[in-house]
Image (cartoon, rainbow, N blue to C red; front, side, top):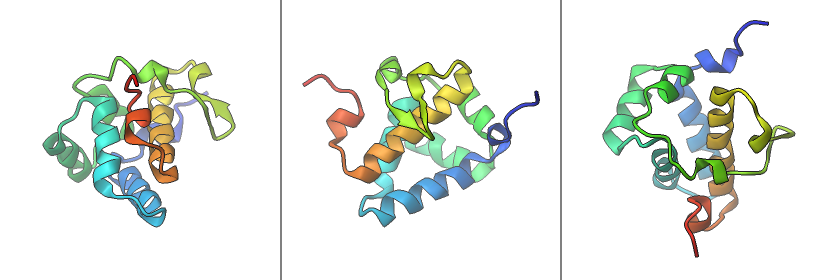
Length: 118
């Protein structure tokens, strides 16, 4: 079976869909970018470069400075699949990001989204 087509989609186009989603729910791009930088280790400038360059999701994650060591604490269901059960590492990273975006859109507290101890 061939590679999943989402891997070749541009991060910039996906990011814009995320922005639309969180803004529609009354949240901001800054909140969105905060969770993406937490997950991937990109700084704000690196994130902007990835958005502007048209880099694929595959390359966005491959070039991520440092995936957060707490990313494994991200659990739950996205598209009917438990993120902690996804075996393909790239798909799991994409779904972790989806899960964080969903939590921002739902208005979950940032400390909880970023898996910060109480």
